[in-house]
Every structure is written in C-alpha cells, then in structure tokens.
Length: 183
Image (cartoon, rainbow, N blue to C red; front, side, top):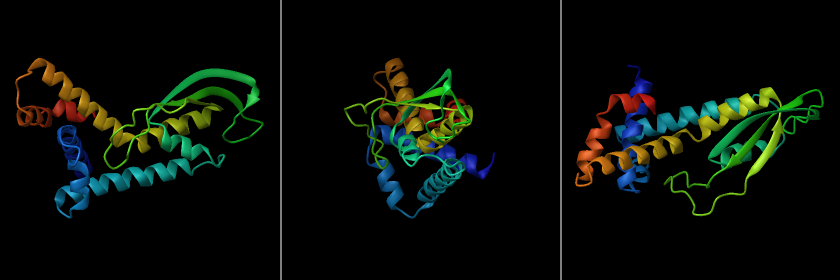
C-alpha cells in the first residue's frame, strides 16, 4: 500500500472520530504530530491538484468560486447548440451540459454544514468544462464527502447495534478495510 493511501486511510479514520467529536479535526490540525502531518499532506495534495485543474483553462472569474462554494454538483447532459459555453465565453464551444451547483455551504475547518441550503446555481457549459468542473469539484470537496460517508457509516452501524459504545463503532469502522477503500 502506498504511503499516500495510508495517509488517506488515517484521514478517513480521523473523520470517523470527528463524527463523534467535532473538535477532533481542528485539534489534530493544530498539532505537529504524525496525524497532523498526514492530514496536512492530504490537504496539500488535494489543494495542489485542485489549483492545477481549475487553472488549466481560462474561465470567467466567478467559476472557481462556484466550484469551491457549493458542496454538491449535478452534471446534466443537455445539448443546446444555439448557446455557447458560459464559463469560457468561447462562441465556438456549444453547450453540452448544465452544471447544477447546490447544497448547504460548510465550514472547511469543522465540516459543519449550515442549516440553510444555498440558492441553486445553474451554468451552461461545453463538454471540456463539464469534465473540468467534475474533477475540480471532487478535489475541492473530497474531505467533506469523506466526512459525509463517515456519518452515514456511523448511522448504519448505530442502527444495527443501538447499544454499542462510540469506541466500539469507531473501531469497527476504522477496521473495515473495504469501507476505507471505498472512501
């Protein structure tokens, strides 16, 4: 197993603990121990790759902000040959997809989502921008989505065993190599 994979698995395990204690992630990030190093490395890799992808094409100024702000993205195939890509403003690029940004904005440090959903934002884009948006969005929100998967897994195990202690559930999830590979 690669060192990055191991560090990613450690991050997933930290997020499982974060489901039970919302101070775990900020506390670890504030430290200088091995866990903090793993967390920072994964954060840096994701941020570097996101920046590389989002800057790979010239786009309108607001596009990177939309990708970063909205935690959910639907990409809908919807060819509209009479319209051009709103993100590149290239008149030679016909619209092939609609990007639908939505969800509740979240705090990047605590991963706590706001109570109020953001207003849905739809943008008509060409094929290349649809692919770019999907990749950039996955990179930008990877940790948040891992946290959501951890919350789901905790809820599933709690439903199966309502009397289990938190430490038992955390150990079971962190020992589930199949689940770790899925996230």
